[in-house]
Image (cartoon, rainbow, N blue to C red; front, top):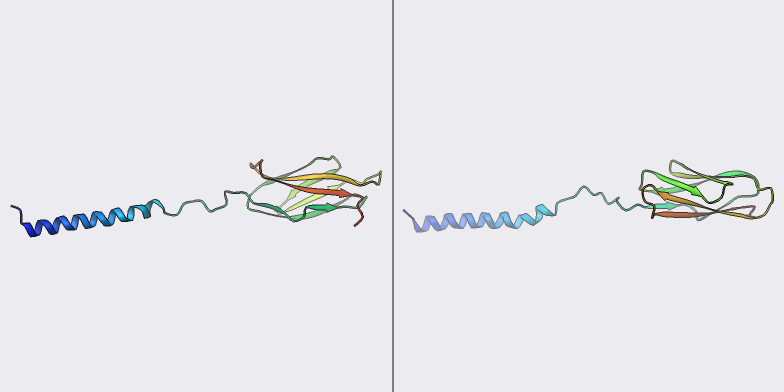
Length: 127
């Protein structure tokens, strides 16, 4: 039938085992995730303003980012930005008028329209 001492030991073993299993359950739910922390886009442009003389020319600016692709746009048709690996290449047409022109190049992390970085462009600017 029921042996009091053996029954109590068996019950204690069951409860002890159950206690340890339940205490480790929170550890299993907080295990490492697949998120490597790069979900927030980070895109930094090496210069805030790029100056050119009145002649046509091009310059490269270093881009530091954790996104795979990024795009660039200019608000002026004489300024031609392009993504070149980890650099922003900016080419400008010659200015016939010899007055200071200004443009804004916008660097956008791909699929992150809300993550924009402007770069000011000036031509015929004395350095």
